Length: 360
Image 1 (cartoon, rainbow, N blue to C red):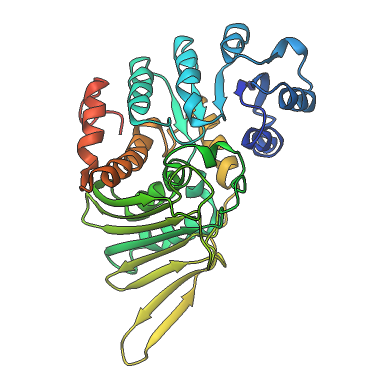
Image 2: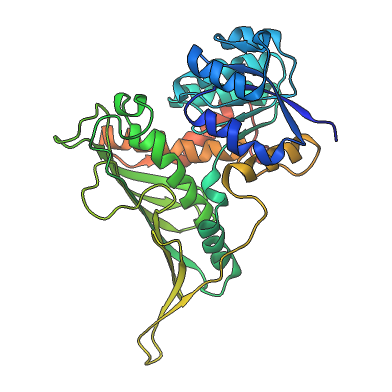
């Protein structure tokens, strides 16, 4: 297959890792042919790293889309600007690989979804947490069926971001709903992924304690019910003063009819069984071995899809169901009411003209 030409929207922050690490194993399959970023310094640094000429570097994404011929674009910029990038890509019928979330508001998510579906365009949203060894191993245990039916899931993310600016990019300390939009978007997707169903109802609250230095809500406690009867609870905090379950060190426990499967910050997946007169028995699982993990795996899936292969799991059709949980959580907290997430997704699909049974 010929190399795919990529227009990269974003050059600093996480985009630096995309350019220097995530795309590196796939350079025989892809070429970065254009780069856009509003920050001239990071644009110069990443442009020099790629060896891009000056006429392939842009401070305005509109200019980049107008000037660069590409087979797809990658969007790695703050969520508030995703819709602008997608709008340009849709106008050019250019497939899209985008960082999560789809956008920073539910209305923007719905409009992006409608635009992409209306153009019959391929779009994948990055859910890299599905594809690292502990989660792959945990999911494999559940899908193997040895523990029987799933009862409920407990998920925990905890990180000390009490110092202003400690969560990477400053915007995460400035925007509202930061823990949900920048954090729980991963963990809610993980609950769907592990539970094998889509969220039907969700309730709970987000808030920001008085000692937080950030402007948005850095704490969240939610419960949810999936459409297959599985229940889940989520604890998320960016003001953790005790045990840390940081990125890639999250705690998940899945209670099943024949035991429980657990992973914690040591990354070891353990199956726990109690009974039979022998008390609690704990068995460590052999980690799943895969060629690619996380972002590198997502890129592999997307390039394979462009080449005519199977669609990845996290297409925009699927990811709409995960991001809907984020905005349902915001609504639940604001209204003190349980939110019908399934109805939100159904309404968004109907507005986009997507019939039931189509597009995931």
